[in-house]
Image: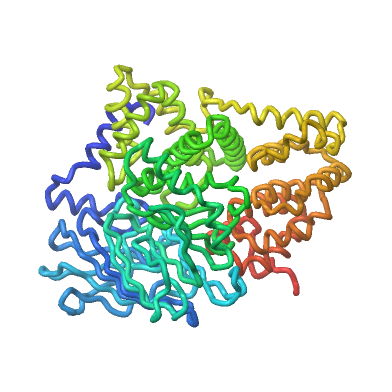
Length: 638
């Protein structure tokens, strides 16, 4: 790459991605090597365009029995339809007339599952696959009543990103392939079903629900949630779903969603998905949020009681443009989703709460980014610090790090600072409008950037910029440096305490401006506590600031790192309670990592994990199993 002009390279890939005028022979040749290394699908030959999904959700057997029917775009007449499946039991395959179609299942590959290849007749325009999911399906988490807030009814939710949709639907599981869908879902009476589509507001008497998604989406945005769920509106286009016992708290916490939608539209154009609702899931949900269109999935760990963690809502809302509207073509281009989304999130928060506030978020993002780079460099994974990744042969989940999110953000912020906010906003708005409901490669974006920003502004294309930021490792020297006056005040308190001023005295001064600190200021405080704290110092802080008993999950997670590092035994029980009940991977990984640094800590980690593991989603289990080298032999004796 280094010896190739980035202008020529980017233009080549962009034009190649857009070109559809190939001969049949060329199409067959290309299809031998899938564009997306994480999908068996061959959309150049046959692509799905619409899904009709008929499903019955069986909590007793922990499986979904369904029929998936696809409309097809047949580009090569004699080519088969190739779908991705993982752990599904296929019962039958037929065409639009009910005639059986011959199919084969290929060999399974790690992470990838198996290709389902279906031979088509000349007249085949639709294909129906009857199948059943496995109780171990990676995307599906089946919760017992005691694992929910209400403790009365079970709960089911999905997590399809990155390539887990194929564990509950046979599908072309690539972010570069889009389709519309409709669904009919049967669930037990007394439960509500929701999807990433038009959604009901109330339970049906018979447990049957119908859905439509008229805008085309990729497979990773397919979503389903079933449980004892209620709804409350927060604005004309926004509302919150949650278990009844959490609904009022959640609706209060997210009362500003309508304002966030309006602020986003002011920046980058109209919201194209009609409704923006959010569902608060049980605590085992492995992420902070998931941007399923029309229905963001969110962790209950952001219910802080003071609306201080709602930047996550801004992030998931921003995905309605960056990701859902313009989507990374493959998981190697993941930064095109997340880097843009973090940038957009920061702009929404700045518009609503001011530059001071957004600069705190940016400073924390830079701290996270530097820590991730240090960790990846220590593991010898320098290539994973590039924005453009090479994840062939690996789980694409490996690329979901702070590199995509925060290095991507700072690259875009650098462009904003170089060209000016007005010019950059005009460019981004045009980018979202002109590429709506399409996929984008890194090379395609760079070609678009060259044409519509550099050349439009009469500025020479900076090829070295791309080499350093997109195709190069680490954090370039010209990374923007956020400045936070509010964090400077936090630093002054920390310095005074480390110089010997008792925390009680600092609390009593200036009517304790710390009472007005946001979660972000407390995180900065906790992240900069000294490494050589004594047990007495830990106790002093805890006695006056009550970190061990905080109701804020972000603060708890940051404090528990110190509890582990400094062997602060009064915090051990609450640490265990936290790890057993919270399944958000962002919190689990640092805490289990810190525990695993010593033999005693590793033993504690495995003891806690034995209790916690059944409560975690597959996504978190997959990560923590590897971190703790978990196996039957590593389980503590009962």
